[in-house]
Length: 171
Image (cartoon, rainbow, N blue to C red; front, top):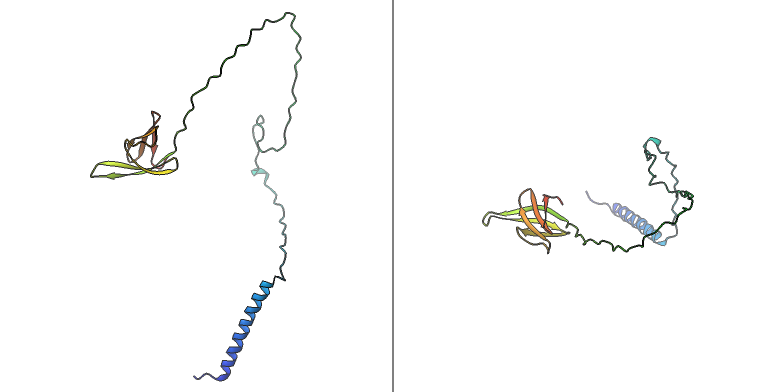
């Protein structure tokens, strides 16, 4: 089949028409003349099921979600003055008892261990206070923390002389 010259002119006309529409859409989109404002859509209020709403069953507790402030009135009990004066002892100052600061327990996660059959040593994969570490038995993590035992189900550490047992993927 031989192409007729009429087919060529029809195809050129279609290509010009399609490219003309594309160029028109791009130019009209960039002009910004027909910017429509967003429309507000109002949804109807949904009625809540009373059976599933929150409420307190005990009457003696305040509702934590109740936004109004309740002011309780003070009750004043009148007392009558004593007929005899009361001897008061001089106040003595007692210094407050201060406790030594307690170090928080470190955050340790035991991820598993690696066993080397040649040396028969286990190496634990742990996350210690957010840092991933590879440690062995008797390694010190800091001044207060030391690895005591590594096995397949738990890791035993000593923190300030206190023994802490951590399971696999536990903390």
